Amino acid sequence: MALRRQDLLLDIADLCVVYKENRGVLQAIDRASLAVGHDEVVGITGESGCGKSTLAASILRILPQNAEVTSGRILFRGIDLRSLSEAEMRKIRWKQISIIFQNAMNALDPVYKIKDLLKEALCVHEGMPDHEIEGRIKEVLNMVRISQSRMDSYPHELSGGMRQRVMIAMASICRPQLVIADEFTTGLDVVVQDQILADMQDLRQKLGFAMILITHDLSVILETCDRVAVMYGGSILETADSESILQDPRHPYTRALLECMPTIRDAKKKLKSLSGSPPDMLNPPKGCRFLARCTVATQLCQSDPPNLEVGHNRYSRCHYALEQKQEKMRIGPG
Amino acid sequence: MQHIVSSSNTSTLIRVGMRDLRRDKWGLLGLCILLSFVVIALLVPYVSVDDPWEQSTTDIIAPPSWNHPFGADIYGRDVFSRVLWGTRVSLGLGVLAALTSFLVGTVLGSFGGYYGGFLDDVITRFIDLFIIIPRVILLILVAALMGTEVWYMALFIGLTMWASTARIARAQVITFKERGFVKAAALLGAGDIRLLFLHILPNGIFPAISNTMLQVGDAILIEAGLSFFGLGDTNVASWGQIINMGMLSISSWWLVVFPGAAVALTVLAFNLLGDSLERRLKPRLR
Image 1: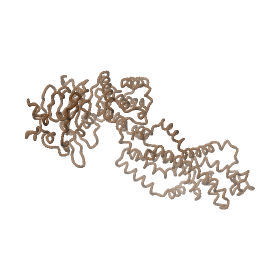
Image 2: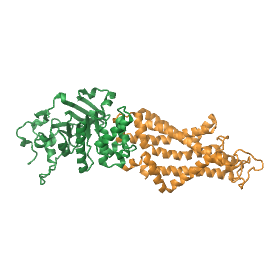
Image 3: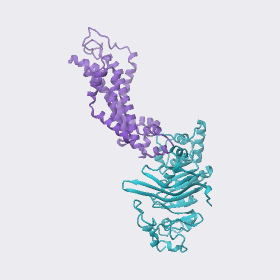
Image 4: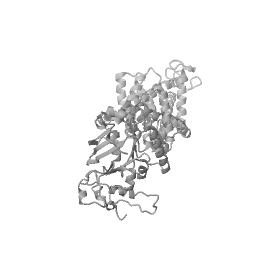
């Protein structure tokens, strides 16, 4: 899918976010650029602490107090979200960009019934007559496949999967254009996870919103997303469509990620784990973020890698991304 | 954590609470004693007992008899009817004092906990101040300055008791304001007041409620104590006033034992009920 500038729903460019800690300044996001088109599902993946959730929080401007966006822009339908006042932001938040939280149980207030939770999600934003609210709630519950008899239930009376569905209903009841799902299937068993992902796709097609899916589960990403951004140590190392990233990864880190994912076809394949640990973001290393753990690093990698365009809408932050000999990038004798 | 949160659920709470109460014999006992006192307080004007103020020269310090089940005091007034009528005063006073304490404590404590920073510092120091001032000394001072009208007394007793409720409310708000669903509601666009009163307090107020239950009993005791010192409202027949009267004739045990038993029973009832509520609502003691 070709992405022209005017097609973009969300356009993040060179975003830098720091956390001011007692121990110093932590570079949480370093020059991240990411585009999301209308109707597109973009996955962000990477290991814990790589900045996935910080990126999501900076879009909605719900970063913790000690965080600061130091540079970059976040264009949503051509408006720079960074320049908006808090009151203007409140009109966009949830109504146009909503979020599905990591842990549904914690995000649902235990003292309210499901219908009241949905009503609040709807009402804080829209002055609507009662019967319309009721209709909207029923409609959205229907879409996430929750029986209407559950409207009067409390969150604790629902199973984990149903709670997550309620969360999805809350996130989509205002008909947003962009939904950010932050690890929303984590903690559910694989079968439920699969059902919810499928239903989510249905819902997305019915309501027509774009989605950013944040997860460290690469299989979820490859199954659901049109495009993938792979993050490591605060920077986006590679962006590509899901198919190409699986077939032809252009960054050693992506390659390493794929190598530690089990496949159904090659059961005997040994999974490889990456030695070492992610960089200390209080003192980020010079040059490539992945340098310390990269098996193909050279002298050149001591310098900052450029964001190379390696194909149609494909970018990779690796000096050797364009190199013909992809074998060179393969980790170990593979 | 999950089942703990789920137990603090408003309308299912009452159902679950009643179910648990049936198993909680002490709590049930407390509820029964309390309900009988409430019934007495409500029905006493419609039952033909003697006028609690009617004096009789023939019955002065009469011991308990068929005519005067609890005896008569030094003015020949029927102690039985005075104790019954005293239920209205003492219960009303206890409830009013505890409510005052609950409102002041919850509002101050939760605002301090919610907003934090300078406001919290000021409120916390204010709470500390009320904790260190001896309550009875303060109340003696107030009684001397403001008079001893019983409802004012109730109000002032309440105003000396709010500090513990405020501390509980503050701690609860601080815990709950970091919870996911509060953050989620904030993200939905809910303002501070909405967050505090519709999301944080409905989840976290229960320990403050059980504390308030205990305070009803405390307030009744304090009033009885003040009355005993002669600082009560002499125009009402509160239990404390009846006991105070008993001081004038120390050998007449019935002047002290019956109203004293009423005080003890009520305080016991509120304590049993408060403990039971705490057991059932405070997750860590379950």
